[in-house]
Length: 504
Image 1: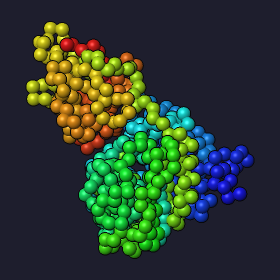
Image 2 (image 1 turned 90 degrees about the vertical axis):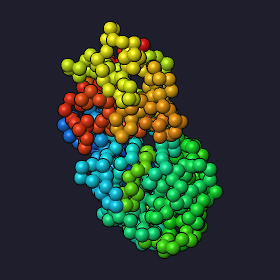
Image 3 (image 1 turned 135 degrees about the vertical axis):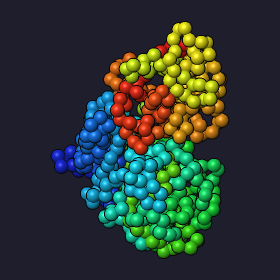
Image 4 (image 1 turned 30 degrees about the vertical axis):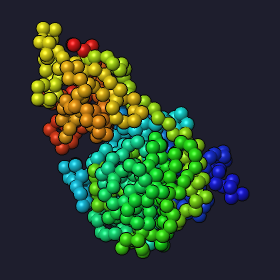
């Protein structure tokens, strides 16, 4: 009978449906005290709001619910609400009933980039996926983006036992601190060793590390990323290369564990299970019980990653319970889908990008002799040099894994690409680094100006930001923000482009 409870759940209509991860945790005696997902319901009977979005055009908000109880998020409702404008994820609702919702993280030891010191919010369209063939959106965290709840209910305090899991994008990470999900300080400050217990994902080596060059699943226990007993390297903690990754961390008095798996197939492996770290301050633990996503306990905001779903439990889950949760995740059939829309681009073609804003339609995106990318008036009678500067060769995206996005190589400077740096567009020589590849990758979509023949071009690693001309200079700009070039006025027109044949 117990195995049946783990595998199945009963909804109010009496129809038997597959149990969700939090039904499985409850059956194992370690119920969820927080359940977050923008892609699906984590209980078989849950039909409430998964997350809230706010659109840029009028600042209106709406909640996105599953298509049915226990089901996948209603992505079509979001697409309709956000049509011809931008949308941000403002709330990730807690499905456990405890009200442990995640909202825009406030400043702490580090300030966020918003004018009031708060962190940025994530684009609502930065991480599209499918679950069993149905479209949904994850939470794409760029550096500076973060969510938090400093007054959570039911989370582990002190040395109390807890477990947590998350489904992440194993190809979206960096070496900075700290892309976390889990238990953190309630003050948004670093209050000492052992005051956190959170899943970390990335290839930071400032504290501990795993085998190879990463990225790794580790535990952020504050003032240390741990992969095992010591503060150094645990060679049993392998590098992760799965597009969809299941990450698990759990802890109880003088014992903790890290587990992980391919979220699309297979079973969990245990990378560490044993006593607490030998460094001072981690036995016993001093957990405080806040919940964070995408940031460190002191609001460290330099990391990046993508979150699809996760939960935290009361009590230390058994391996068997976690194995059943992993089977449920695999059965959800996470898969990639296109990041692009609107008029298609052909790899290898030469294109020019023409401004659509009234009174500026003779101007094209071009680089100048100092490698700045600006808009310039270009015509058939322009010089050969200017025509080449305004011509770009479409290349497969240098970064972003299987994103299906593109990079734009300079026609007259082979090996140099359009990239953003400090949000300004520049022409840069490809240095082979992961950072350059991601900064030089862009995702065309249906134009925000509503014209089907035009395209808007979104930054891959900052999907809230679009290629925009402002005072004839090109930026990756947000729809409203702290910079002058983020101004909301004429935003939709300024980020919409006619993609035409290249001049050269």
